[in-house]
Image 1 (cartoon, helix red, strand yellow):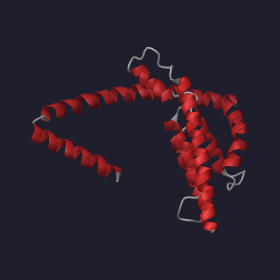
Image 2: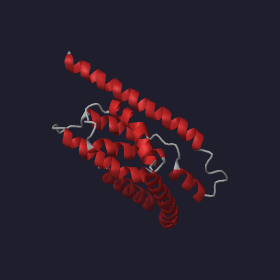
Image 3: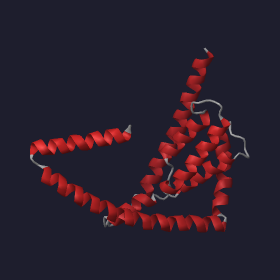
Image 4: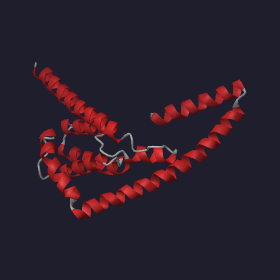
Length: 196
């Protein structure tokens, strides 16, 4: 569906440019933005590789294990339906840890594996309570170090690319807290409706 929307927007833009006589500007913008996208991607890849290396060092040093132990009690309370020794818990903790360091790209495969494992626990064709909670938590994206945003700011020669760290921590904390509160509110509201 999203592909259809993007294709429709591109077609409308091109048709409008044809009738408006600005096709030359559209072509120029296409080539310039493609060039800029490649340059930006290369810059982001280098930062992502660096932070993935840092994550690997943290894993080898046992820091991720310590973080996992810190988060496990919270994860158990957020996902009471998942057995404590289930692989989904490990994937959830890994996903949250990667998001904490602003590594959304690295967190995605772990998030998908967590969803896959949670789906195995559910016999229903609809999303389980745990899946919905995880989606809300993952979307809110609790972040301590917004590495991708810092990389983009560095790419565009920001004078202080890391000045957003403080506000990012505050905003992502509020977003995560809100996601958890709304998740619980809607869960209990729907449970009350089913009971009546």
